[in-house]
Image (cartoon, rainbow, N blue to C red; front, side, top):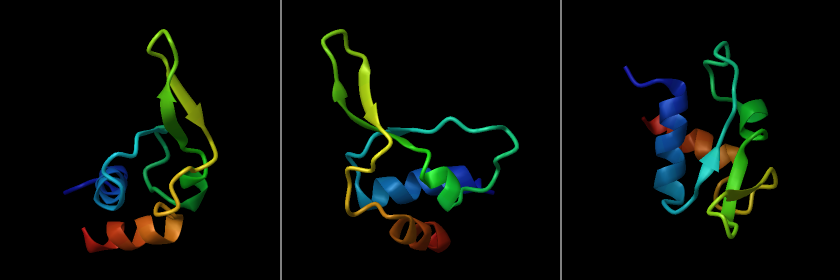
Length: 75
């Protein structure tokens, strides 16, 4: 059975295949929800040392919680 967090990853890839993100979560966070969605660090590039540049402000208008959740529900 596919986990909720795996469904989230697949939904993001479906909606925006080039989107890169990182999410730090507690092992007790087994359900992807809007609260966790709002904690995502979106990768916007790399610096001169190849370290990811991230932001907590979602730069992808096609990746709203509502749209991602709709895709998750299809899986």
